Image (cartoon, rainbow, N blue to C red; front, side):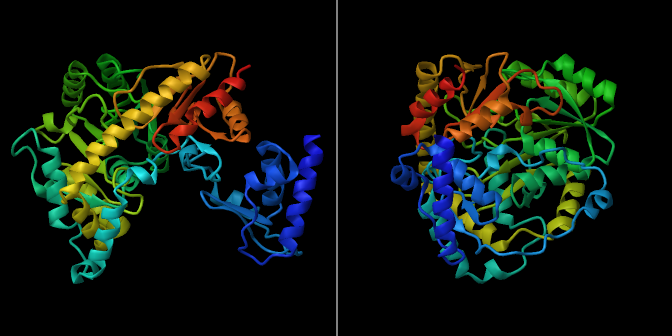
Length: 464
């Protein structure tokens, strides 16, 4: 019956495409479901048929649109590229599921960013409008970045340690992902090893692979890797780099305790290595406000990265790398080769946003709302999806890390959930090597919290 309905809906959509101009918006999934008395899965199957035929495109958050009228065209012969390009260096799936586009009606628990309603949009719009009117926003900035913005990042880092870092130690980058890619390439060469926590951020995994690095994993669960495991990994591999997220790690939400932080930093010092600290969740503390590990480093072992993109606006692709000595110079030179400089307009707007009194008000509100969302999703899972095992309640960040029953396949499970209107992130993409079991990641900051219970019910039904 559902196949017949799907065919009828697809036929209806084809007639609409034939009568519409390119770019025309098609009826939403909900409207089609009501019109044909069909479920959302049936409607999505029909839409997927037209997408596969190249007639319709789905725009995240906007809907479905006509691509072009049906016509015969030559299919490009690109098979030659397979041989010419050679091996894929970044893995089978270099882009993680957190960047997946879904329609407005899908419950999006897969995202990597907070919802726009949690960001200071009024201040961002005002700052961009102000920056456009200023001449300095159209002048080439210093290669390392606007000095006032660099000073702000350093002040944020040194809030608890006086004179620990200098403004000149900071370099502005085009977002955190650019910072990771550049740091990896600047401090290690192709074929060299890098130690990473497992699981960890998929973007760091991909950046390391694209830089030609060999990833050496060390396990972590609800806390830090065991210092002895890290020491053994550095010793046996000869790695000089250790990439880590000490505070509210993505995807697990794990937090290093004070003893682990001291012991791991001791290992890094003894091995004369670098720890690349990704402080991605700096503004997402909930129950605890940890201090960056870089504040305990006085000899240039920690390379610190912090981005504003997730907490200020997706528009402000601005981050900073803070490092000392020759390592800082190599990173600055690599960034200059890649980008020459970061847009002065974005730098001035970012500086304006974070230096307003309202920035602290925004951070306070963000903390309160993330607390409510986290607690609601934890309750929803406990009440409506009891077969999903929550590894722990994170004390900050944006994500819950859950384990599926042992006989489940996370990739298949996530694909089935998507057909039921719930988008989640399967766990395998967060592991740099062997996967330790079937996991999923749920983001409580990116979707409508009023639908958390509905999503949990769908996820439980898929385990029956």
